Amino acid sequence: MAELQRSPDKIRNIAIIAHVDHGKTTLVDHLLKQSGMFRDNEKLDDRVMDSMDLERERGITIAAKNTAVFYKDYKINIVDTPGHSDFGGEVERVLNMVDGAILLVDASEGPLPQTRFVLQKALAQNIKIFVCINKIDRKDARIQEVRNEIFDLFIDLNAPEEQADYDCLYAIAREGMVTLDPDNIPEQKSMEVMYQWIIEKLPPPKADLEGPLQIMVSNIGYNAFVGRLGIGRVRQGSVRVGEEVLLSRESDNKKGRVTALFLYDGLKQVPVNEVSAGDIAVVAGFEEFNIGDTVTSVTNPSPLPRLKVDEPTVEITISVNDGPFAGKEGKHVTSRKILERLEKELLTNVAIRMIPTDRPEVWRLLGRGELQLAVLAEQMRREGFEFILGKPQVLFRKDGDTLMEPMEKVYIDIPDVYTGIVSEKLGPRKGVMMNMNPILGGRMRLEFLIPSRGLIGYRSEFLTDTKGMGLLNREFAGYEPFKGDIAHRQNGAMVADRAGKATPYAIFHLEDRGRFFINAGIDVYEGMIVGEHAKDNDLWVNIIREKKLTNVRASGSDEAIRLTPVKPLTIEQAMEWIRDQEMIEITPLNVRMRMKDLKQN
Image 1 (cartoon, rainbow, N blue to C red):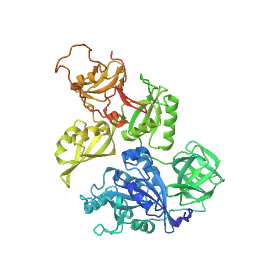
Image 2: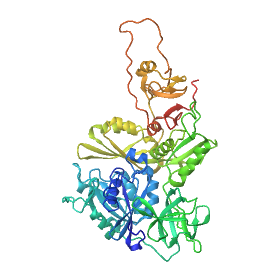
Image 3: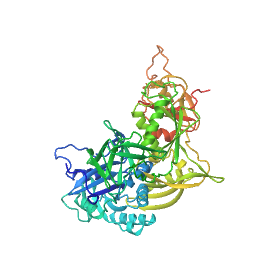
Image 4: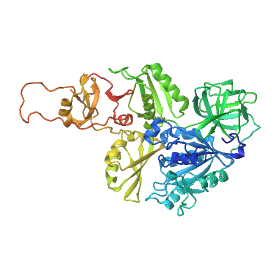
């Protein structure tokens, strides 16, 4: 193993930033594999940095993660960041750990909304930015146009001259290949160009070895032996195991001793006796580490300014399950357990807020978007929690007497035959078309400005309308005066009017009334939503009705019961579908929808 501690001029700290699915995690995979840190026979998974089950299933990065590679005599600390704006809090807090960022852009899709979002955050930190155009082997690659679009984006974001004068590399991350010339792809697939480039072009960290200790906690971890870990960049000074330090928190300061120190070596955290300015370190010794705290010197404390992240725009209520099936499927069902889990989430997720209500078993959760809140709900469900969610609502503001609401810029990439249906659907949702450009392959790129609440419930409808071939991306566009009422779901719900087990006979005879969300044999209760009504009113149905057993049989009079297969709704789809008077019941085994008032009359 290489010696972990380096002088600051032999360290490089870099983040990989990009729009979702442009290849960040795959690029980091090959930077790790080709650094010679793993044995030839060592088994390595693809997307090794996506360690959470949800990340692997969805194919997206949700939480920022650290790793380090050694190249020649240099140590390169790499931070892999999420590409979705709902997890923008992750990007904002980790960019202060690095001195540079590689902006990865797809050679066909070009810069998309989250490319703009993450680049804006990087420019605000005033760090060195490189551009890497990935997937240059795509049949529909348009490398020169994408280069021009990236430059236009830098200018549009008012990048200072030294940041707009960036270098550009070209990659096929999937094959572990980076080159300086897209027309001349070398036979030998290698990341050598990128390693050299990081070392020569990226400035070493600004580090004052003699100054008082400063470590900004930008990430949180846990170790079974030493407890809670604070992860962050050592801005100045140095610290040894056993030294007394001061933890500067939002409300107060607390003294303590450093019980363990770690540095990154590949994917592992390796114990060391001392860390010094310039490196990204892991510190143990406090149980109360929070993101934004500063570990500093006791004799000469110099805390750093606290992290600031964008404000939430969406809220949802979360409460204890009070339905007829409460406690049957979950392990953690009490208000105390749910509150503990939410407080634990607040410690590591700077983009989420929690506000208590006048009822002790109900809380308001504020976040960046429905996806962020749905991911938290899914994580809790897998941990054995059982709870109820309300309908997502946008957060309004008052500017004097004017009611202001959050707006979104929506970028839509679709086959041009669907332009009409998409425009027709976004009109009633108060969407205004700002731009319309044809792109290669008979596709159209549309740009809309629309209230955030107009997008709640639209994504699944959009995928249906475009036969799954449409791409929809969004970015927060500030607050504007309230745009008026927006009609939500056009169809009513089919609601079970009694408890029991759903029968094939009942479902078969109700199929012409709408579409079902449940299969035969499922336990239901009064007030549980079992399907979507074909008309706009709610329909209470007897879904447990069985066929009358008589001894009369005639040829052709007994129908063969063939039911339409049903795919259960996900948490996100349920959040999009429900109305104000409906709720989502989430347990480790099921996602159900129900009425707030379970009784029909």
